Length: 244
Length: 195
Image: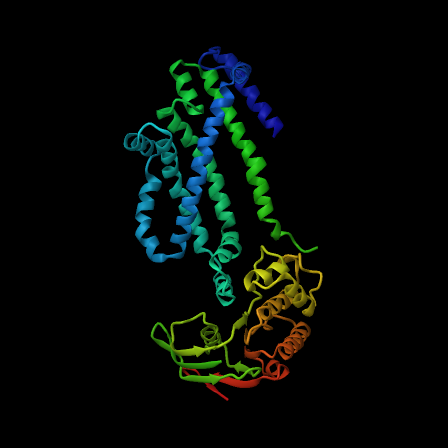
């Protein structure tokens, strides 16, 4: 992996040297310098933090609604038949249109920004979780009924563990999608965050700044993936180990 | 337990005809019959898993089931596979695990147990909530002769100790004899019970 990343940086440096236009095609060293300057000024941390907060808020709300909806649609054929056309429309609605409409209808504020991301994300989570709910084991349903398990216990110990791979898949796909949409939302209508910084630097044609912010956020997402999502998945899957 | 099934159909096709069966406490009944006759359908109705039939099933106490497969929660330990579905205390669950020969295996997941051990765990779970009637749906079908024999003896011992009534679906009359169960045969179309 180190070798592959090294080759990428080398290729980038060579292309930048050939183009010889540091404003439009800065090399890795130039981007690193800008990144260090932005970090030293505090702007990088503040804007990355604000974007991360929006990502977390949208992620939590979208996963909550999407998992609940997916479970209902996967378990109730009638509701699924009713709501499926809405889902198809929402899945295919361009993120940009949803964002613009939210800003127009709700206003240029935080609620609109998070709502736009949530509306973009919920259909995808719902569709993925619905597949999981359709695949729930009927024999475990029988078990829960025979032993009269209370609804909460049934959800926690019978339903959700079966749904875990689908929810984890939706979470992973969701996180990478959400942060990209958050950037678009910030680009269009917020005055803070990584998306806003990209907007600002785009208007001033500062490509090194744009890349510095983009790489920082990619790094943040990688850290979340390796330090949060993967350990959680490992913990949830410990029952799959073979016998001693 | 009082079972009064007048009719059961699937998509307009009659499967079960009139069946009347009254079970006194501790009575054991084995239901025999060829594959596809409706034994499992009958058991699902008695268990309360199928309500789409004409008739009534009255059980003043509690019914539990040992399914054809162990039907365990793979993501929960052996102990939790008893305590979570049945809501009994861990101490009682441990005592039952010991009774079925699974002492010390509380923390193992089902995948870490052999098929025979999984079946014993399912048996322990069925006895945990102190049922008045136990339903068993060919629970020894996929076991080798030795393991099946040990399971039958264990089941008989648990039934003796708890004084639980039994409805036991099987296609093997020797299993019924080993559990000292009265044999009833499901036959005909739609199927009815003959004593």
